[in-house]
Image (cartoon, rainbow, N blue to C red; front, side, top):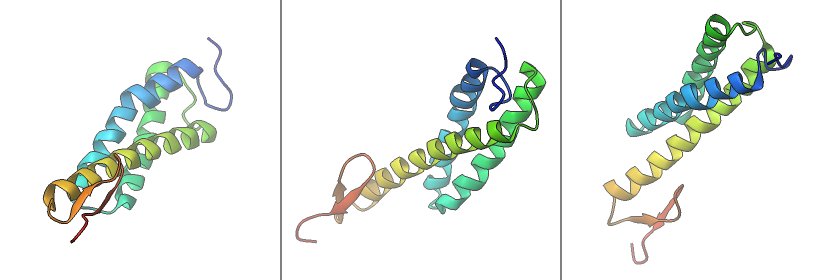
Length: 117
């Protein structure tokens, strides 16, 4: 496969590394940060670091371009998105579980006050 010039490597390799390998790590990162009641900004910071690690692994194992700004940007946005989704899912689940007398589920990403609270 020819490398995609914007991504720094072939599309299949890029997607496999970004979504499967590092996507799982970003999801776990968002989950861990939310379980400690930390700010979502930590998810953004850690996912940017994960994107840098993904670029290095892409370079070292798949002969991709190390300093591909487009590949880094797309990878970082995907990983930040996955991390923030995990953060919000965990945050909503924790609010409902820890304060069942105050809140009830309002979809997978939210909660609302119970009637009569």
